[in-house]
Length: 291
Length: 317
Image (cartoon, rainbow over all chains, first blue to last red; front, side, top):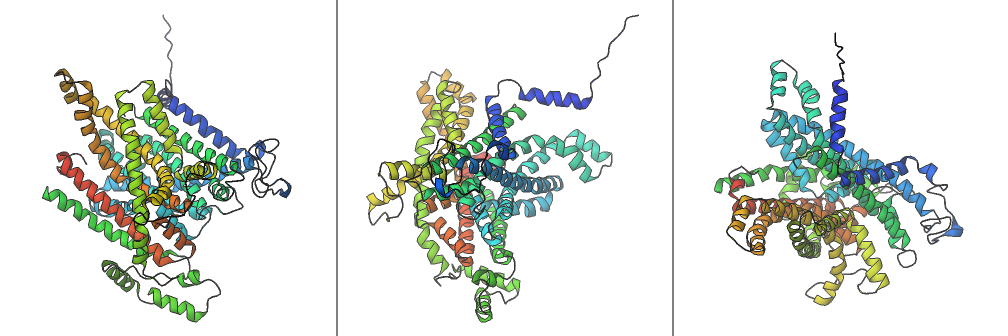
């Protein structure tokens, strides 16, 4: 009697393998994005192990020292090591952006799910019109005004930027729900008597995650720029905490004698934004092969 | 067509109402007593009460809104808490600088993006395309305010070619005006050009794959004529309308650019009023910015509807 070998693979493993296959192949944009983002996340997480200096350690004997020697990127007007402040600035920037995106994504996706599923006046005349009204305010102006009302500081910057992200997530989630709610699996769940919240969270949400993940990545880039912009204007992270935006603001006063103060934080800022943009574009290509 | 215009305008009404509610609520979102926040901890009770009366905070909330919106309909946005000057007048003085900067940005970004976008689309997949797309992704990643500082470093500090700050009105001295606007315009235009370039390339690539282009080629029309007369004209429609919708992002970017180059525009007015806690100017500026965006979006949508019948039939929305 011939022996038959059966290879049994769990559905979860199959799903992971299928998704992993999407990321293989020629996707230079995606992998470049992953690489850049990894460097910044690594630097932010392990900052104390990467540099021997403290970001707020003042050294009045080495003020405005040019790049080189023990200070790779030079020092600022208080003798603080610029490389260290940029590394810790990555921590600030990524944290503010991540929290803001989390606020925007959680509220936005929840509203988008409800708006798309329930439809009717709640969708067309309430939620979407509120989103139209929010989107009418230029993103940075909205964050600035909200920052002015709530006061400066990291937490308020996160809220102000996060609220600005809500309409984008609402629109994406709502559009996806419209596509999904007429599909057979959703109809079956409804006929089987599943509660609407269960249909939304257990059935629809997992199937609309791809565009939401892409939006999260692109929003992280936007959050980094917004944080730097708010901090540059004095309404984000407050000195002496390190932030790329506040570093650029200070640097503007020393352009003639210490141009490196403006160059290095800006390069870090642009690279981080590039990384998240590439990651978002790459994910968009990988998760949406037709696009 | 009339139905499309009516429906589009009707949909704007609740948005305008909600914008007015959001702007009106700003003063009431201030944690604690707004008068105390504005005047500081050392303010006397009499001064606090006088400010509450001036801001109308002693009246019921609904009446405050009705009086405020009534003023807005008559062009009255209140008076500055610092100088006492009408907010509408201050915004009116600042807006031309911002409008000039915005128009300059749109012209420069269009001049960079449209030819490059066409070139990249026509040479899709080749080295020239890859370099252009890479350049666009770099341009998209450089924050305009950092680019502004770098331009100052290069052209003002190093080569002494342009002034670092200051503004001369165009009709007072056109040459000096263009000198003072050149760097701010370039700083903002690079990112806008990157966005426009990507849109132009994507739109033209799609059009070049359409059946009517193949038909035109099959008829023996020269490739250059097919691209310029048939493809580019069709590809430009969604690009121009989409770029109209980018105005909100552009306005936001101009706020920091104006601050970097010390231009006395709308953005500088807003930033200065934030630091002087001049909440009537903050409210007025937020309202004007939102109305500008809604107005531009409405005009863009109506133009798009006029050009493309699918939009007004509700098929392309």
